Every structure is written in C-alpha cells, then in structure tokens.
Image 1: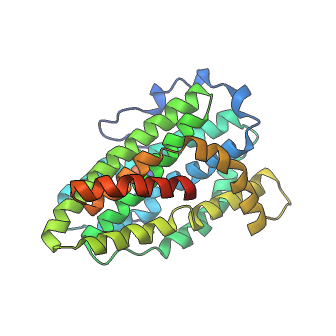
Image 2: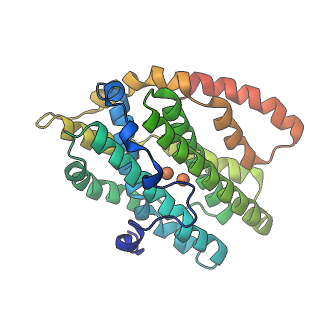
Length: 282
Ligand SMILES: [Fe+2]
Ligand SMILES: [Fe+2]
C-alpha cells in the first residue's frame, strides 16, 4: 500500500498539465449517443476505477528507484497526479453520462479487493527491465484510450480520451528514456528486455479489469451474481468495436522500440508483428 498521501495528491493538479477537468467542455456531452451503449459504459467505468487507484501501486516504483531523484521527482510531480487526474475525469464522465450508476458506492466495494491484488504485484529483477515493463503498461493504456477516442460519437468523450492517450504516450517516452539510462548502466541484454515486455503483456487486461468489471456489473445489476461466462460475454460484446478502431501500428511500434532493433530488423519485424496483432488484439 502506498505511503504517498493520497489526500494531498488525489486532489492536486499535475504540474504544467496540458489539460485539466476545467478545460473540458462537459456541457457538450451527448448523452443520446452514449447512454444506451453498454459496452462503452463498462470500458469507461472500468478504466475510471483502475486509474483512480494508481497510488496503490506507486510505492513499489518509488522504493525501487529511491536513489534516483530525477525519476522519483517526475513520478511524484507528473506521472502520479496525471494518472489520478485520468481517474477523476473518467469518474466525472461516468457520473454525467450514466447518473444512475453509484460510482462512489461501487468503488468502495472494489477498492479492498483491488488493493489485495496490487499487493501481490512485484517488480522486475533489474531497473531497466522494470522500465521496459512500464513502457508496456503505457503502450497498453495509450492504445486503449486512442481506441476509445476513435470509437465514440460523443465529442466530450472523444476529446477526453484523446487527452488521456496523449498523456500516456508522454509517460511512455519518459519510461523509455529511463530504460535507456539503466540499460546502459546495467548492461541489460535485449533478451531480458523482451522477457519483461512479455511478462507485462500477459498481465494486461487480466485480473485488474476482471475485478473492476465484476464490481461494476453487480453495481449495475444488484442481486445478480457475476461469473467467468458473463465476463467473457461482456468482452465479446465490445471486441468487434475495439478491433475496428484499435491503433495496431502505434501499439506495435511502442512495443518494439524498447528492444532497440537495428533498422533492418525493425523494418522486417514491424509488418509481421502488426499482422499478428491485427489477428489477436484485443
Ligand atoms: Fe492513465
Ligand atoms: Fe500513464
């Protein structure tokens, strides 16, 4: 559990933020195009829950890089406040678009289960591998929000998710720079970086989203139980939409970059991995 004071950080605005909740034109929200879209509701609500809890898995990272002021200062002043702002903005969106959903009440039930899950997450054995793993997380979130911004006809959701996606790309660039710094220092070979990316890829869209979706479903349908079959059904509902709008090329480029392939290998790998990604993602 984080020792960072969430009371002060959760309400703080990111330093030199590119956008804020006040810069979003909430009154332009088109409820008519989102209100009946169940798939979108689950995608946005689940994202809002996970983003709002970023402070739970921040302490591991701060401890691991405790001797590197450049990294810990950036994490505290930029990364964490920006991630928490994503949570606040998405929560506000859910509350405006689907006012019947008791965001605070459902989140309260979600938090302890999610915190227990976060406590099990470890770090990679070297700092460069941990940074590669973080690049992979930001690749995942950048692609997710880019997809949402393309999927929706609501201008507010489109603008909001575009802002968040741009933040995630910026986070990726920072983690990538720190990866290079530690890779040079540790002499970490490419195979270790690939392993860290693979470890994280397997975790994306796993337990985190399952916990969030189960609470959100039970909040939306009180008295009904939630099981694996239902989870798969909900995922199946959003898959065709996501697949059509997913930024495959961006995702693959962000995934290959930490491997530092030479130009020739990169130009060969890119279309191959992109073709695979088009078949398997999401
Ligand atoms: Fe985020
Ligand atoms: Fe991020």
